[in-house]
Length: 628
Image (cartoon, rainbow, N blue to C red; front, side, top):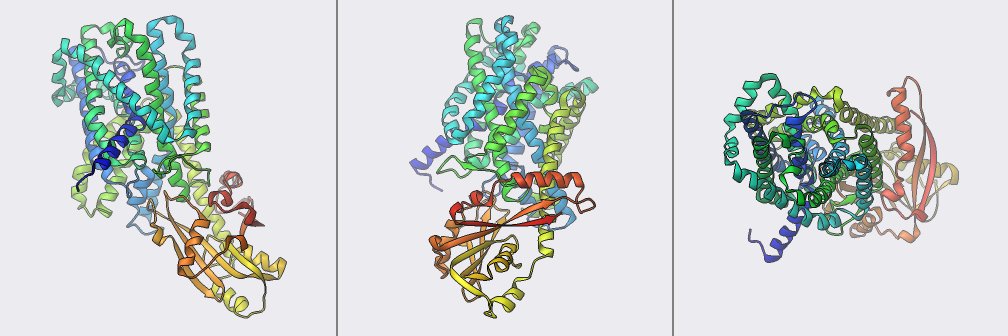
C-alpha cells in the first residue's frame, strides 16, 4: 500500500513517542545488568576473558532471540485487532474453546496469573531503574550515599504525579530524551570497543555455549542476572495498543537494539581492560567531566523506563475491567486521537505506594536485582503457552509447526525462570507475593460476580412470562416518560422493575430493558453497537455491545436507537439501577474470606452511573439485600 507523506510523518511521530514510552524499561538495563552478572552478592562470575566473552554472547543472543525474534517478529503478530498484552493474548487464545470447558479455564488461569506477575514487574521496574541511576552519584563522591534513597523517592513521586497528563504528553516529552539516551549509550560503548575490538567475537554463539557448559552450576546461576538485559520485552508487547506494532518494530530494529549491544560490548571491553571498573562499569565508561550530566540523563531515562510498565499496567487493567475480572475503576482518556492512551488513578496510586515501600525496604539496586527477573520470566513463559494456543486454534497451524516455533522460546524462558527461582529467598518472594495478591483479587471478583448473578437469577421472573401476564394483560397503570432498566441478564425481569411495580403500582408508558455486552475483541464497530428487539407495544429490549477497549457511553448508544425506530428523549427518561447490599454467609459457594474480599471490592467499585456516563440527575437506584 502506497504511503502518503502525511502517513510517513505520522509513523515517524508515533515511532518517536513509542521510543519514549515503550523502550525506557529495556533501554535502561545497561545501568545494572553487566554489574549484576560480575558483581552480584550471590554467585558473581569471575572476570576472565572467556567469561566476559561468554556473558556478552549470552546478552547478544538473548536480545536477538527473545526480544527480536520472539516478541518483535512473532508475538506481535498475535495482536487482538491491534491490541497487545497478556490479557488481549488470553482472549485471542480462548476464541475457539467453548465456555466452561477445561481448556478455556486453563487459558484464563494462565492469562490472569501472567497479568498478576506483570503488575509485580510494574512495581520493581521503577524502583530498580531509578535507584540504579541515582546511585551514580556515589561514583562521583561517596558523600551522596545517604541521599540516594530520598532522591529516588522524590523522583518516583514526581513521575506518578505526572501520569494524569497522559501518555500522549509523556511520549512527546520523553521521545526526544530517549533518542538522546540511546545515542549516549552507543557513544559510550564505541570507544572501549575500538580499543578492544576482540570483544566483537562474542557475537559467535559458541562463546555462550562454551560458558554455559564449562561453568555448569555457575553458568546456570548467571542466567538469573543475564535476564536483566531483556526485562521490558513484555511491556513492549503490552504497550502495542498505545502506538501500534510498526512504530515499535521500527524503533527497536533501527535504534534500540544496536545502541544496547554497543553499550554492553563496551562495558565488556572496559572490564577486560580494567577489572576494577566493576564498581560501576556503566558510569565508568564516561570520562570524569561527563559523569554529572550522565547521572542526570540516566535519571530521566529511568523515569521513562518506569513509564513503560505503568502504561502497560493501565492497559491491562482497562481490559480486565471490561472483561469482568476487576471492579469498575475510573478511567480517564488522555488523548482524543489514540483510544489506548488512558490514566487510571486507583492503579497509579496503588503502584506508587507499593514502589515506595519497596525502595525503603531494599534500599539499593543490587538488593532489588535479586527480586527482579522472576516476575518477568514467569510472564514470558506464560506468553509462550498462550501464543501456542493462538497458533493452533486461531491461525490453524499444525501442532507440530507450532511446537517447532514455540519450543526454543520455551526452553530459553524455562532456563531464565529456573535460574531466577533460586533468588526467591533473597527478594524474589516480593513479586511472587504481590502477583499472588493481585491474582487472588482478579479471580475473587470474577467468581463473586458469577455467584451474585446466580443468586439474582434464582429469584428473577423470566421476561416472556412477565410480558404475557402483566404488560400484555393491560392490568398495570402507566405514567408519562421513558424508563430504562439496566440488567446483566436480558432474559430476566430486572429487580428494579419489580420493585417499581411493587411500590408505585405502575410502569412508564415506554419501557426499555437495557443489557450491556462486552466481547473479547478490542472494539465493536458503531454499526454493531446496538440491537433493538420489540417485546410488546412500547416495551423494548436494547442490547449495547462493546469491545474490551471501547469507552462505554450509554446515552450515545441510545441515541443510535433512533435509526431503528426507537426514539428516546433523554429529558423525559429515567434510568432505574439496582443497588445490591451483599451479606456474607458461611458455607456458600465461595470461601468466607473470599466473600469478604468480594463484598469490599463491590462496595468500593465505581458506580455504574459514572462508568457508563449516565446523567446522574436521571438516575433512580432501588436497593436489595442479597445473601451470598
